[in-house]
Amino acid sequence: MFSVISMVYMIVKRNYFEIIDNKLVINRNIFQKYSVDLDHIEKFEIEPGPLTASKIILKDKVKIKYDNSQIDDKQLKELMRQYCIPVE
Image (cartoon, rainbow, N blue to C red; front, side, top):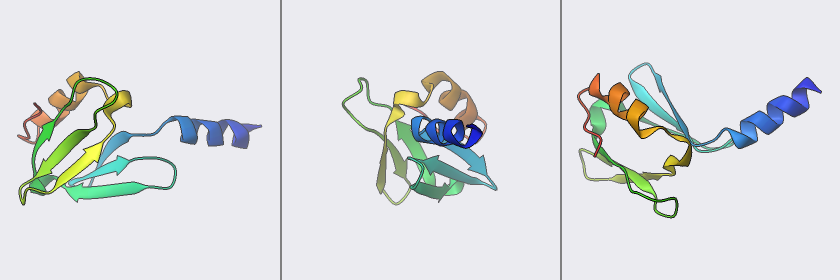
């Protein structure tokens, strides 16, 4: 039963960020992870509404889209302030 609960939790809990060893890890779902060095991030662009993807803009102008439906914008701003990364 515990394994079923864990599996459901992993499927439901998606689109969250972790910071591991100076890298931002984007957990898109159970099978997809993307990581980027915090030093390469220029800023975050938060889009209003659930139908538009927000973006992480890298210093080389590459845009990484992410679904911010499960990410608290206020917590993201506080966290990124520590790394001097603007969240707009």
